[in-house]
Length: 190
Image 1 (cartoon, helix red, strand yellow):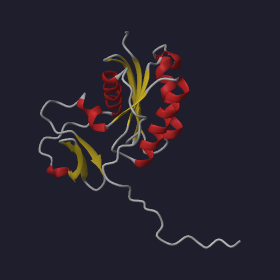
Image 2 (tube, rainbow, N blue to C red; image 1 turned 45 degrees about the horizontal axis):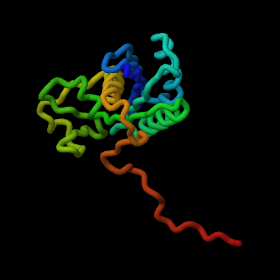
Image 3 (cartoon, one colour; image 1 turned 180 degrees about the vertical axis):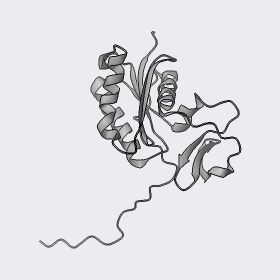
């Protein structure tokens, strides 16, 4: 079996990033910082990456996407794009948590953290993710660039491929801040 060509991408933070790997060899990675606009930029960025490497969508073995934790809207943009591409191309899509993606760039013995709101960070400990104050981490791993994060997403998927996996879904550490309305629905007159 030949090495898989995997297109990995991440929109879980204020960036849009993508990487193309052949097995465990990164071919090319790009990352763009952006607070908004990932939905408009993602597909063009992916096409530009494939074109730069002389590849087409039909060449891909799998899609990989960063599933967070991270920005609510960004996660949904990435996950829905990955699921749609995989369905349309007839290839598997792998969801990769931010913790798994960061392992590929983190120095040994450093704590992997993911930025969270209000001077907090997400950390992964014994199979669970927790939200803790950022200053409580004594030896944090340096934050990867968006391009390095996308490489980590693709490399992690390369280790899973060709095994099947459930469709990608956002990885939430805590429930969303939004909640359904508590008011009773209005009475429908007939």
